[in-house]
Image 1 (tube, rainbow, N blue to C red):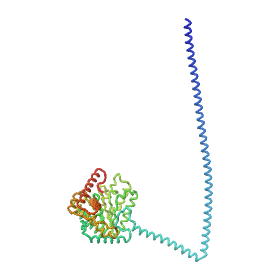
Image 2 (image 1 turned 180 degrees about the vertical axis):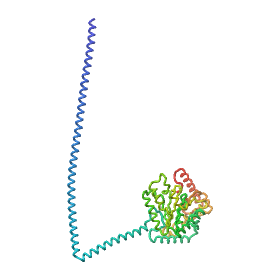
Image 3 (image 1 turned 90 degrees about the vertical axis):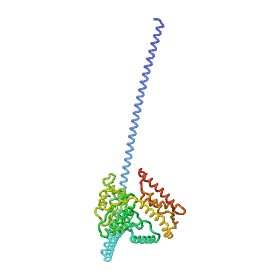
Image 4 (image 1 turned 30 degrees about the horizontal axis):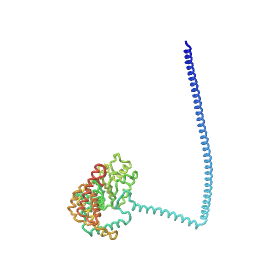
Length: 470
C-alpha cells in the first residue's frame, strides 16, 4: 500500500469521526433544549395555578367581607325597625289610653246628667234612622233608575224609552212629521201596503200581514207567542219587517246581533240572561230580533265552537225552553242550515226573504227615488229655514216609469239594500252637478256602472276576494 492511499484512508476516517462528533453534539444540544422547554412549561403551569388560587382566595375573602357587611347592615336595620315599632306602639297606646279616658269621662257626665243623656240617645237614634233611610232610599232609587236606564249592552236598538216621558215626546214628534208629510205630494210607491215603505213579493207580504195580525191577537188573548226565523241574503228587509211586525202588533222591539255575543267570552251567559230579564219588564210584550243568529247559535258539534259560545247557546235554549207570553223571538240568518237543531226546534214560523223580483225592484227604485231625491228637497224646504241652511232642490227631468222599469230589468240579482245604495249613488251624482238636475242619461250612467260593480263583486266573492253583498 502506497503512502498516498494510506493518507486518503486516514482522511476518510477523520471525516467520519468529525461527523459522528457533530451528530453527538447536536443530539446533546436538542436534549438540553427540550429539558429547558419542559422546565419552562412546568414553571408556567405552576405560576398559573398559583394565580388561580390567589384569585379564588381573594374572591372568597371579598364574598366573606360583603356577607359580613350585609349581616351588619341587616342587624342595624332590624334594630332600627324594632325601635320604630316600639315607638309607634307606645304612641298608639298613649292615644288609646287618652281616648278611653275621654270616653270614660263622657259616659260619667252622661250618667250623672239626665238631660245630656236624653239628648245623646235621641241624637244617636236620629242618626241611625237617617243612615237607614238614606240607604233604603238609595236602593229604591237605584232600582228605579236601573229599571229605566238598564238597557243591556248587547241591545243595539230598542223602542223602549230610556227616560220617563220620552216615549210621549217621540210619539208627538212622529205625528208632526207624519202630518207634514201627508200635507205634501202623494206618497211613494209602497206607502199603501200594510208594511209602510217595505216592498215585498205579494205572497210574502200577505204572510207577514198574517203574522202581524196573529201576533197582535195572541197578545190580546194572552196566549203564548210564536217564535220566528227569517232567512235569506243580506239586505232583503228582514230587520225592517221585524220592526214593522212589532209596530203593527203593538209590541216593543229590541234588536241585537249575534256577532256581538262571540267576543264576550265567559260573560256572554250573563249578558244573555240580562236581556231576557230586561225583556220581561216590558208591559206591552217585546219582540227580540237577533241578527246574524248563526254567529253564536250554530251547531254545538262544530269543532270551531268555543266553550263560551256553547254556554251562551245553552243559556238561550234554557230561556226559550217554554213558549213565552212576554217575548217573541225572531232569528235572522243567511245560513239556516248552520243553526243548532235545538234552536230550530224552538222556531214556529220559518220565512224566506228572497232577492226581489223585477216588479219589486221597480217599486223599490220608485220608492228610493222619491225618498232620496223628491223628499230631499221637500223636507229641506219645510224644515231647513228653521234648523239649517236651505239647499237647492233636486229636479227630476224625463225619468219616466219606462226608464225606471228598464233599470229594474238591468238590476237582476240586486238586494233591497243594493238598490238603496244605487239610488244614493244617483243622488250623489246629481249633487255633483251645478244645477242639481237628474235626467235620463245620468240615471242610466249610474245604473250601468252599478250593475258592472255588482257583477265584479260576485266574481270576486266567487274567487274568495270579498263578500258578494254588504
